[in-house]
Length: 141
Image 1 (cartoon, rainbow, N blue to C red):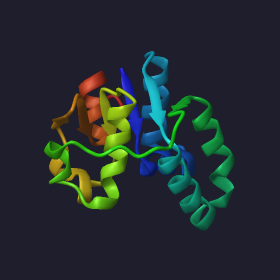
Image 2: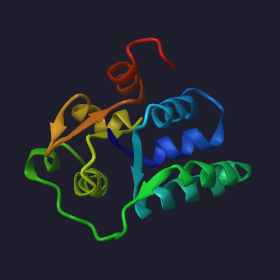
Image 3: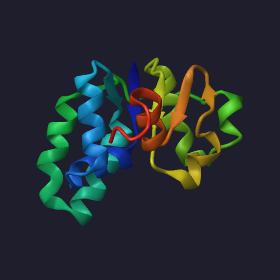
Image 4: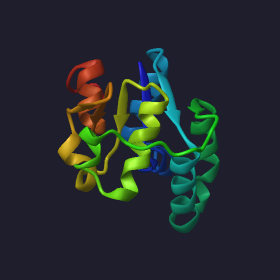
């Protein structure tokens, strides 16, 4: 499965040795592909530099296991997803679609909560816990 990571997932996996980092490890061990793009990487890096600069090395380690889109060109989001997201969040879901990912995982319940469990142009939006339950069954992380 191809899984597009949000900046907050990269941030969380980098800043602490907690459930998000373990989820990514389990996904990699299970043969799943982690994906991102320059936009989410820069957002995660910027937030880590401000709040947890000591975690930047761990971000680089996570990125070694992550495929990045070759281009940073932003694509338009199909109408089925655009109406449910703020303008600033649309390019991230569009990137997941462009990368032909099966899943987009985000902890951003405020903006992506209405899309949790929904599929837009082949990409199902999950919270970390719903992704873990979907892939590994409940209680795996």
